Length: 450
Ligand code: C2E
Ligand code: MG
Ligand code: MG
Image 1 (cartoon, rainbow, N blue to C red):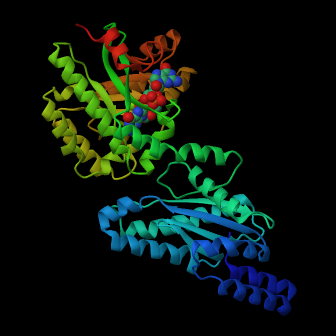
Image 2 (cartoon, rainbow, N blue to C red):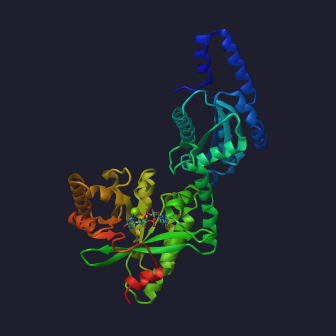
Image 3 (cartoon, rainbow, N blue to C red):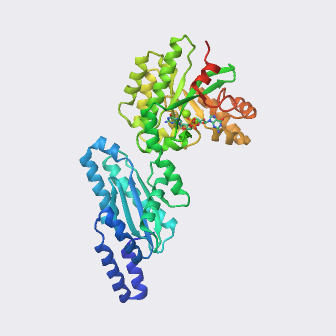
């Protein structure tokens, strides 16, 4: 697909001749003449007029996701340079741009001519357009791994331009968490969803400051030993109306904002304190796992920070397990493996979480110094639903055990699922069949021996 203005011009030229060419050229000059960088205020004021003059007005809301992190690594001068490159690319040198401005430090609003292209074609075009920019920047600044979110909205001729801007912004916020450049159009309901999401960070920050992060524990149960052999720590916090916010909502948002480490350190701190208390009370300890985000591993001193917290408590290091989802293995593999090796050498346990929900090759998994592979509920359910799946599952469990991994199945809800899982050779189970994630006092009363 070519959205280049010149191609459109020459195509029309062949059909309608020079007169049309002149008209297009003069429109183009008109459009180019307004392609300066106005203030946000005048962008809002003049936006409506521009919309009336073009065929299909597509408003882009563009966010550079990791600027704060970029600045920390490369410095603010390079950060300023990055923003100016972004303005050059999306506004000054973008032939489809009619009008654009910087709406915030790392956000642009860009009004583009969409010609008569469909939404699908526009998504495809801007997906590639943004990806090219991201790749150019990441080649120059490989450690920052910048990411762009692009929201799009087609502005109607008689529509309030402020509403159009909000809708482009809601579309941008809807872009799924991904280290790919991502583009989305506004759809119904996004406004409400976006408002809910926007409250996550302030609510989380309040919960952190006021020590209101809740840690729940879900037991891991050995069928053979008929007792629990571990637990997973799962976080929660409440919104101002007292409703529990789900990690499915806040984890991706905190990851994108690069503040997930605050949550993960807090959960680790609480787990260490718990183990320490149980140790002091003479209770039998078992490993408790803490989820670490792949973003945590980008931090240079993550291992030292973790280790100094645990060392200070004097609990055995093998009572702390770290769960990483298999998505951690997608990028920077050698650096990830080095960090995991370091954790393992220091005596911590490592689990690969949600195995089977992503696309990792067994070859990569073989290089990971993990103790445990946790099969994802989706994978388990699918495997148990037919003979071929069962055979694959059985053989995978066998292979993992042969190369010294412990194997656990997550999300087990029924006795029938459990029986099939055990028949596949997997002994350890985590799921609602045994217990939901429990508040610490309830977990202690049920599972922590005197
Ligand atoms: P996960 O680490 O795979 O955790 C297991 C999830 O499966 C938990 O959801 C748990 O409540 C749910 N689950 C357990 N048994 C069953 C079952 O039998 N059936 C079904 N349908 N679900 C079951 P939860 O607590 O909502 O957490 C979702 C995900 O959020 C976690 O998946 C983890 O990736 C992430 N997460 C939770 N807390 C934290 C945290 O403190 N830090 C980080 N980085 N991620 C976290
Ligand atoms: Mg987990
Ligand atoms: Mg999991």
